[in-house]
Image (cartoon, one colour):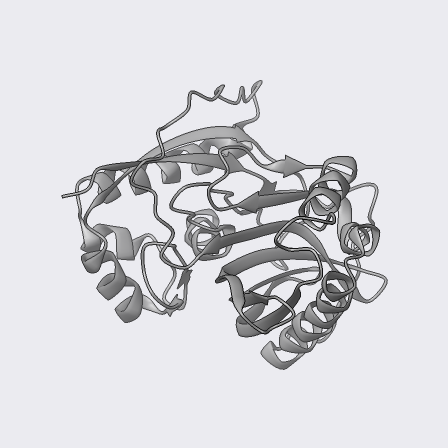
Length: 284
């Protein structure tokens, strides 16, 4: 049996709308509208990627956006760091220089009037159309001036090998009296315990009925309780260690209740998208 420790970087609560980006009222919060926004964003991302334009790639993030990439022990936070990461990855002489990307959408939905989440797959190819890297993504977006802008990108390789990746020690986030985070801490503790106990029944109950799970250790993107439980039953060789590192104030749900999302990285990447509905259920 392989023993892999997953270090999770947790945080970014959707609690209050940001003062820098006033809440943008979105009357149409249908699945079709969410898919339209995601497809438009993917087209922007592809154009910027295929041209190797690091600045354009950075500009479709919010200024305080985050990249969480499989295999990396720490997130890439803020516009300067994101620009640096894209500049480095697309530089001449690197494998991704001159590459192009194919992006597919599996699921998209609104969480509030101005927050959208989506998940899907990607395939990065060279000029000979040979695959350089392929995997899954699950991202969170803020609507700004009618366009989706990425708050957090979570991407990981399909079948990523994590056998030899060791856990790192990360500083625990200090709540400083913010009781809004109590439900995040409680949910993280339950999820970690159920996962390490291989209690697929209890883990499944942590998701809302149409929640989404997208992980590197499992093929496909699993939507709904039945698929999630089946995927968890197959995912029995890994262990989970979780550390809360911080949170971000973004938005409220339409009911006025605070919403919570969770950022997990890196080795077996439990992307924001699949766990966010889990915590949304807790907050409701």
